[in-house]
Length: 172
Figure 1 (cartoon, rainbow, N blue to C red):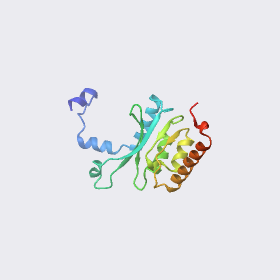
Figure 2: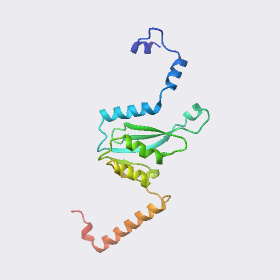
Figure 3: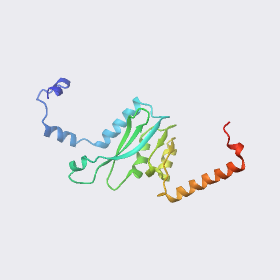
Figure 4: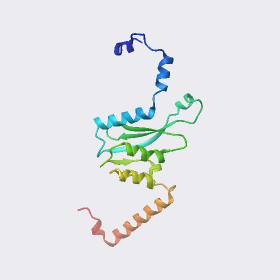
């Protein structure tokens, strides 16, 4: 209480825990998230950096939401500074695949390289990154059989080209 009084005048006394809980429960978390993302964008240049995007479950919060499923958030992190530059709540009945394009739209990613785990290896996500001026590095696993086969074919073709023209593959 004394700490709060040092930073803010409370002429009618410090609010009770119940009052603070009601006040915080009324806050629209999406608006706060958007405001923070915009503010970070104003003070931190998110263009031309390495941005890692990954979802995380807030396991300890599951008890606090009355036994419902574990809430998930999607983070965009500047890999160099480890600063969270964007964040979205992953709503029930959605997942990272639908939330990543939304998060990419919120960020200024022109010239940035975006990395995701294997869940980001979808055409929709790659297009969202590309359409916003970013580049991507993704993991491709065998659970995406068409993309995996296409990449394997591409690399096999490169191996054949290298055998035919080894000098064309030398460092210059």
